[in-house]
Image (cartoon, rainbow, N blue to C red; front, side, top):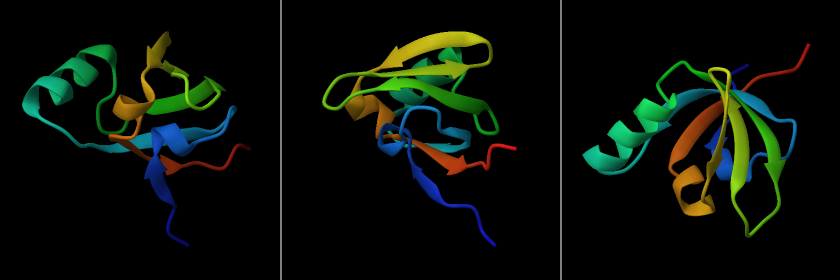
Length: 81
């Protein structure tokens, strides 16, 4: 069964996944990479309440992303065991 790939902004609180792609210009991709959003990075949504920002844990850091930016980070959903 193939894992579902969705934008980070669409994940509910507690959702975990792996970054598979970041869409956008080189400046945005570089900035998100500096924050830890690189292909293969594990992310967990700590807080999400539309239309506000999304608070996530990535590589040991808590990062708040605007919803528009979070829509550009595509993740593969992981089952929590």
